[in-house]
Length: 457
Ligand code: DUC
Ligand code: ZN
Ligand code: ZN
Image (cartoon, rainbow, N blue to C red; front, side, top):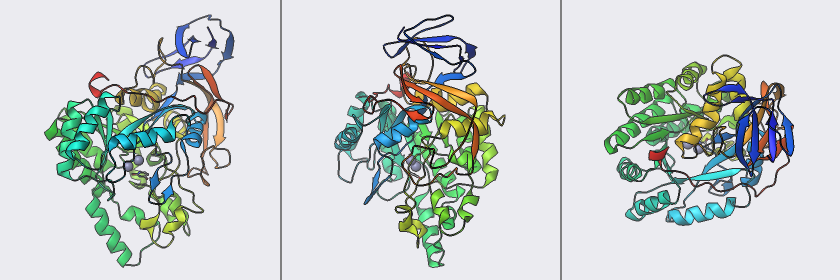
């Protein structure tokens, strides 16, 4: 064996047990007792879990003349430091750019620049015949998920377009991921608020109420039913949307959904911070009332929702967020999270009795890998799987300040929070890439991952 991890407690979505893991050529080769290898890591007293899979991140995403502040290098290093070994980002097609061109552009940005493995979701902003044809071709090349938006003028598709896109997705093994917020409700409220002189960050959340999210979720699931298309709803935030999801699930429709870590831990109270501080929390859908927390946790624990991701999309507070100083609608949407997903979910989920240890692993690694066509290569600890592993110390305490994190952004939304339980080592393809909180790997070692069609997951 090249490497043996000894004496740890292996935790997967299904089991918790004591065993050693033997790794050869970057792959898990043996799981058993008393293994010996050229290099040995002692994981006594620690959990050994599959590396995290974050299926919703926006690294170096350009909107107009600004770009989110973590690029593929800084963002994947930060991910690794927080125990994530695979990310899925998005292609960002410009108007009139073909999907193939957008894929090539994104691959050029990422290939050779990533510290961990990555893949890309397609994004469609129209349903022209040539776009539909490209989606089929790209599905065959391993791009088996498709982001669709019901808001953002440059990105959104109308119901007719969504129907045509879903119909194609259903035939070629693609899982649509939909950002559900009713654009016209939001436009109406934004204009009304601005006309009343309400320009501060707190009005961001008032312009995007739960009703707008739940309406779009309902509509999207109805379109999915008509086209017999499975669907994955991005960043669900509120009880109103959950009720919609569960109603369609109860009819037997394949509906999946994620919660982003910020919506489980932070609330709309953050928008009441003095001055412009609330802008740090301007993300969409916005942070909600605390009363939504327990229904979301319960939906994750019960399996109604399957994934916890981050929607990592950081903007510098001192510069980029400032463009919305006099108008909340101009604040770039998004916040950092790629590095703190595992510790926050463990601390607020497992430590507080809301999630079992196995459910925690399922939510951060196994279910995302499975839904997006990467399992069992990723998301589990099994012979033949990639040796992407996290050694997690359930006793390690850490305060999530901007200075001790690696994300390229000038603030932490979690500045005040101390968590218990933290990754102390991250291994990717059988190599230690993070040790005691510092990246010791090689940028460029991460590989692009082709993914299986939805029907084979
Ligand atoms: N919301 C999005 O829909 N995308 C990026 C960041 C955000 O907050
Ligand atoms: Zn979104
Ligand atoms: Zn997003």
